[in-house]
Length: 247
Image 1 (cartoon, rainbow, N blue to C red):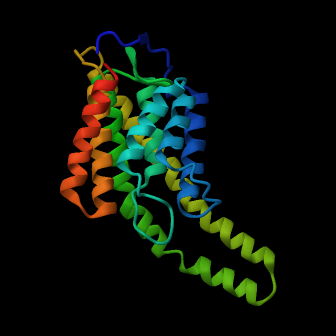
Image 2 (image 1 turned 180 degrees about the vertical axis):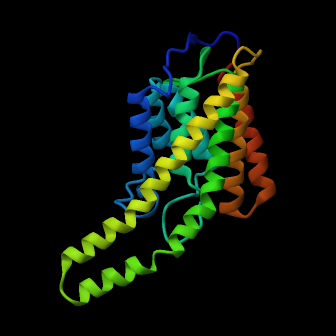
């Protein structure tokens, strides 16, 4: 893999006011997209992590992280009342952390670059843990929305469309605030971990990205088809093919 393009990282600090403001806004947007508002799937990892990378100054790295997390969470679609992980804000934080990491970048594919192995592992770890923490929080929040439903139904019965709109907007607000808090916590904790790993010897980030992507796709195939053995064999072949393809 030594013959692949390698470029210096150029992303800035996530704690700069402008970057932090953008990230909090993305946390709000992806938060409401998951549960209440429009649901145009901007909360899906591929889009959310890319936007996090844009805010941090390195879209290509954010997009690569989004591709990996999309494989892990490809079945986490915001439909119905399923208790899904909080993939939107978690992906924003993961993409921004990877994009802000110092050091070099290596091409995973055209328009996709990954940082070194240690910062990429930190970004993915923060994203997965944060999404898991958000799952019970989202479930608890959804269970406490009964008053919103009652208000909307009462307004509709009384012929007050403004009341229905107000109830829906009020119901969306907690989702957005939770997304903002999640991104702030993820970026804060991840920045501490990135600082702790800075200066340590680290390997090629593709050795982290490719196996995680392969395992995620293998798990998705198993859940979708029910043929776990053949799905995992296919995942192993996919990982091997990708590894050969990026040599």
